[in-house]
Length: 553
Image (tube, rainbow, N blue to C red; front, side, top):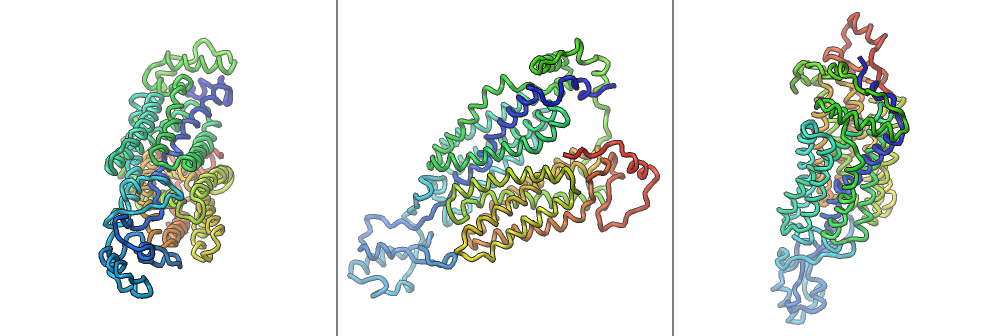
């Protein structure tokens, strides 16, 4: 019996039909890039200080000294959340006393910003922070905004696959694009922070669902050789392209509501793609809709100028294409033995900590010295060579060494940032970008590595569970950035240390490169500190004559 790929082999691998699907599906990922990181500018926190109302009867000298100074990064700056008690300094001003000369400012009583804040407009005109005063006692809401978006991503990860299995890849792809675009548009009309964040959760659900379904649709329509390029370079680089567009939009549109409006336009422009992106023939066959599947293949053959056979799908073969009933597996099977449980726990840590590094570095770009918009653009741009490097490394080198190597590199340069003098801002930014390069390279290899470690029976479950750990990492990542408010270097020290630590742990994984994919839990390789048991004759035969080889990228 021929499998599906053999039935449609006459189409070729890279004709006009495949190129159209490749680039249109990749283009549908672009809005995900800027929606996923839009919080960087929507929730940007500009420099601020306590407002002193015009009604306060203060001399110009006392107005200029109404806010106490504090030490930040080795220099004295105005306090963001405190001012001298207004009634007291108004009395001093009325008496004609001069601050610093007649009055010791350090002895004055202070109070909170009872009249609100004055926000600098040098970088942002408005953000949700300036709109709803998310500073000082309310500053915990800023990282929570980012975390709740990633909670939506986590929820969307649970439902996207099931929805596309039930209602079709194409229908769910465009429905989730509509959710992402529509609820982003509704955010423009938010009247308070609570409304904004609830809508942001839904945007997160649509964002990841669109990404996952486009990934599934592409891998099901494209041939084996193109499928690998699409799932690595295609999807990832177009995501990075969308990410690069974000600072460009934000640079010219510095009001958060207008920025959101501009970011919804590309989503609307994706509507015409409905008439060009086909449904997955594989999914149609699984739903017994053979004529629709054959019509799509016939249209693809015509587009590729290839004569299609009279009957593409043999009814007998289609009947046999129905998947055999598989043994029921539970999540506990990932912890069945000590060896499997160890691999699973290490995989969960690897995914979670790599995700923390990736998202924390992405969200922290505005806190770097220099131009906020340029730093964000560089953070997005560095992802492209990172993806290409990962693809090249995966083709020829052992997985655990290259993943551990790029994690060591990324974590090491992040730890070096604390040694850079405060005046060498360019060097600090360069090290942060190199750290992002290493972490992004590692992140893009994890799907391949995890899929190769686990047997067929639990492979999908293992990839799903470990990728859920990465969502948990993205939820806690904003709080690593939040620590920078207390010490600028603390986020880099923590991220660098954890990245190096997980790089060490990666060395204890079994090697999967050039090894037959395991079919059963018993065939899984052992972690490096376990004593290898005597191999059975069957396993030795499998190693000498593997039936399934890892396809090198």
